[in-house]
Image (cartoon, rainbow, N blue to C red; front, side, top):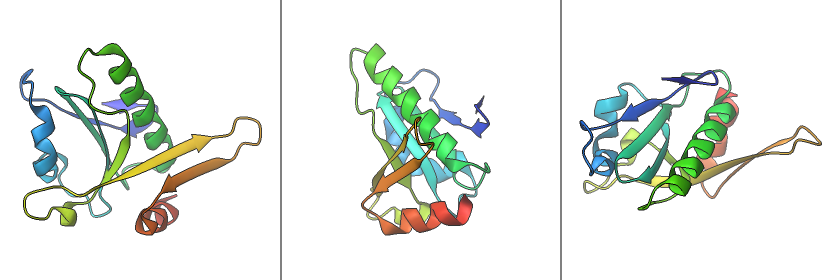
Length: 130
């Protein structure tokens, strides 16, 4: 689906409750993702992702997914997390995905955008895409 100009993939298993297990196999659902993907899993039946490099403004995709995750966790009785993560296909080790928490903040007054993470590789990728 397209949300505010960001292509978002909603992964579902026919209403299955354990959609979060698909984090182990995101590459099957996303296809080619050389820069990885932004991922949220706010509740058990919901996993959403945006493949980095599919839009000209990845910070818009970050903001959109953060807002979606926040709404889902507020509206469900079994929330998982409202955090946004960076997933990379080569980061799956021992069958476990490596997810790095990322965040974007917009300062409405100054017009500045802040991208936050503990992984410097993510900042490098964002600069190359933005």
